[in-house]
Length: 156
Image (cartoon, rainbow, N blue to C red; front, side, top):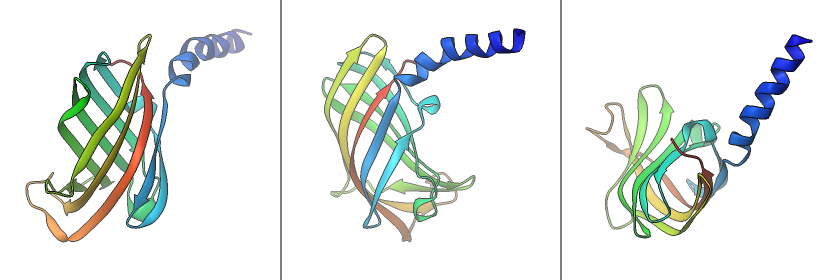
């Protein structure tokens, strides 16, 4: 009986927190249609709909041999500043976007309901392979990602 009561208590307390955190990134990865799902337990925000920081992690689920996509940025009056984007292939292998004319991270809107922030935006970039956290990059081994995202994330 105590086991069931404990399980019910955990579900009642934890499920509402994660139930509202959801999101997807839809677009093309290396010219293949893809949908990446938000990993709510690894995503969060600080601040409000006008100013703060946002960190989102999407599961690549093996698409093009990749594991996760990290998108982080400072949120300032309707735009993304200081973007930090990485694609993880494995523990020591990542892809970092080229910061050139093709790079795009735009926020189309943000709203806050209670503690939850909903962010909508678009991104486009070519990311080059790196085994040393972006210090050196191999442009002959790259991935192209273009798409839009909508995510509702909770506070830190």
